[in-house]
Length: 265
Image (cartoon, helix red, strand yellow):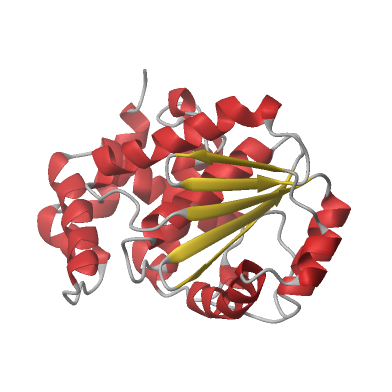
């Protein structure tokens, strides 16, 4: 099993996306795109009629506005291609052809030169997959780099429908159980992760927890996140987000625990 950082994965994907965009005949033959629709920054290409998925893509278009509202990031700097396959087999074949070195993933986001592409297929959880990967895509149109844990934590948060993000994410119940047994997510440990293969279920859950805390917790914590992303966007050395959070919020981990103990509708 190869180990890839998010940056390496994007770099590997770049050449393939470039080749694909130029109209490689093998890609087209393996998976002809019979429907094409535009929704906000997303250019959607599917190997089946998109009609039943139109509400989902309208939701993805609204996701861009939600990121602007909560994170103060600008609108997408480039359009984003979304390629949807009819089933898992065709999806596996296409990804094996485009990214032979990358371990297979049910949904995949890659980027090159500010233009992102998302690859997924139609199944019961496709809405979750697309919201997750399109969050990555929207962030990376304006941010040159996002730490792995934060990138995944934000994608985990926004992968749920808008009405379920704050109170009904599946991570919430398991996290409260972790906290009850004194398993408090260490932000510095998450910041040390560089490879996607290092992200297991606990790491995704804890990354989501810190993002939830920053979006719904004390105002100084939210401001620290917004200013951190702004510095990345402006090319200023951002340092570690944990340093900023400790400076703004004494007893940071304790505040995280209190946040989730009190978090109710």
